[in-house]
Length: 373
Ligand SMILES: *Cc1c(COP(=O)(O)O)cnc(C)c1O
Image (cartoon, rainbow, N blue to C red; front, side):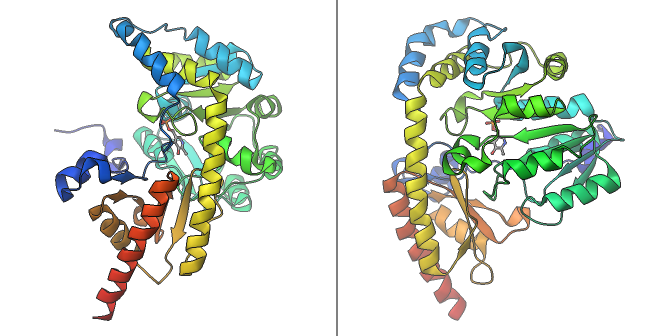
C-alpha cells in the first residue's frame, strides 16, 4: 500500500512507558511502581476536581458544550484576555497540530531548538516541511537569529521552559529576539511549564496578554496536563490575537475535548491553591535531586519545570540506568533518543523521591561492578 509520501519521513512519538507495561514485563506490583517519566503532577488531581467529576459523570452521554464558554471565560479572566483570544485543544498538543496545519506545506520551514519537545518536528514532518534546528542542545537565541536570517521560517517554536532539558530563557531576551522576527512568521511560545518557571524566577515569566500585544504574530500555548494535574483529561489552550484564533477554529474538530475533560478543566481553574501548593513542593523536592547529583558528581540542568535532567557524561550510559530502574519499577525518561546521555526524572512526592535515590544508588553500584568485571 502506498501512503502519502511525506509519511516516509515521519517518526512515531514514543510516550513515557505506562505502569501497565512494567507490571506485565517485569512483574513488579502496581503499588510499587513509581512513574516519573511523563511530567505528570505526582500529587494527583485536586480533590475538588475529583469530586466534581464524580458528580458529573452521569452527564457523559451528552456531548460537551462545544463553545466551551465557561472554560474560556475562566481562562480569559485568569489571563486578562477575552474569550475570542482563546482556542481549546485536546491537550496543547492538538493546538500544535493546528498551528502547523495553518502555516505549513512541503515548501515551508519551521525552526526549533535541537533538543526540544518532539511533537514540533513530528507534526512538521506530517506536512513535509523543512525542519531547521539549532546546534546547541539548550535554547540559544543567537543561533535562532542566525538561522532565521539565513533561511527564514514560517514558524518558530520556543519552549519556555524547555522539555526535555528544563532550561528557560529570560523573557527580556525572548522579546528582543522576537522584535526582529517578520510579522508573517508565526511564533509559538510553548508555556507547558510556565507555572513552574514563573514561580522560580519572575524573569522567566511570560504573560500571554503581554506577549500577544507586543507580538500579534505570536501564540501562547498552555496546558492542564502538568501543574493542573489533568494529563489524562487532555485539555490545553492557545492564546493569540483574534484573527489567529479564528484560523485555528477552521481546523478544530467539533467536540474536541470530552464532557468530563471540560468540567475538570473548569473546576481545576478554581483551585489555584492546590496548584500553588504542588509547585512549592515541586521545588523543595527538586533541591533534593540537586543535592543528590552533586553528591554523586553528576551534572544536571538548572530546571524551571517539574522535572530534572541528570547528565551522566562518560560515567554511565543513560539507557542502561533507565532500563535498570525500570526493572525495579521506577519509570524515568532516557534521553538517548534525543542524542543526550542523560535521564529526565519528573520530581515525585517526598516518599517517591526517597525511593528513587535508594534504588538509583543500587543501580549505579551494580552498573559500576559490571563495568569492572
Ligand atoms: C506536556 C507538554 C505539552 C502538551 O501536553 P498536552 O498534554 O498535550 O497538553 C506541550 N509542550 C510541552 C513542552 C510539554 O511538555
